[in-house]
Image (cartoon, rainbow, N blue to C red):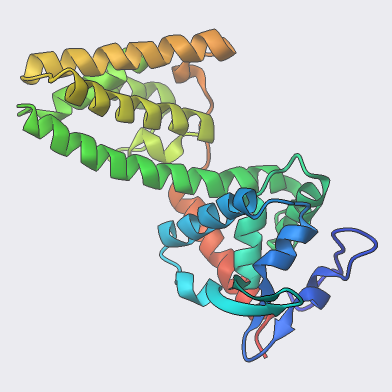
Amino acid sequence: MTTIEVFHFEETRPSFDDMGTDNGFRYWWASQLMEALGYESSASFNKAINKAIGACMALNIDVLENFIQAKRQTKDGSRMDYRLSRFACYLTTMNADPRKSQVARAQAYFATIAEAFQRYVEESEDVERVLIRDDVTDREKSLSATAKGAGVENYPFFQNAGYRGMYNMNLAQLRRRKAIPERRSPLDFMGKTELAANLFRITQTEERIRTENVRGQVNAERAAETVGKKVRQTMVELSGTLPEDLPLSEDIKEVKRSLKSTHKDFKKLDRP
């Protein structure tokens, strides 16, 4: 990766690399990237920035090395902005709105640099998968604490009830059906849609236990299964697809390795 393709968001704009600044650290101003990607509202664009920062944290990559808050002088005075590394630009673009033509073209460009042009749509989804999977882990911890406070003594049985409601089978059966490797969570192989559905199931189970003051192992299992059934019903009504029939995605561990490798490759591009 010694040569960099010249990329223009639009023909009338400078190339992406010409927009960069070298000052001991090659960076791009977030506000300039926002305009180049076709955003008019900083509030809307900040959602992409925040998701990108979340992805960095999920990958255990130094956020402050890639997203540096600094004052920027403009014709209207100084304002707070971000100095973005090339990798930060990549993560932000992959979390931006692909319905914007500039975003779609930029996603394809960055995926080319990441040596993955043939799968740039999947690459964008992979970044979101990492974020959602991280959220699921946090919410599972929260649900576990709530369940324990509600009197759940056998958490695996309680957890199984939620899967049984959503998949019409227990966790062991789901593992066999989807050929999940031994000692690995099925969540690590779920696509974005299935992960998001499970995140909703977990958060709503916790909410039900809290709001309805559910107490005891049996009642908590019943609540978890009921919520799982509701999520299943909604998925079938909206897409016509049973959750157990959704295809597997690449192992989330491999996705994280790939994204970390991309981070290293992008750093090499801007090494003096």
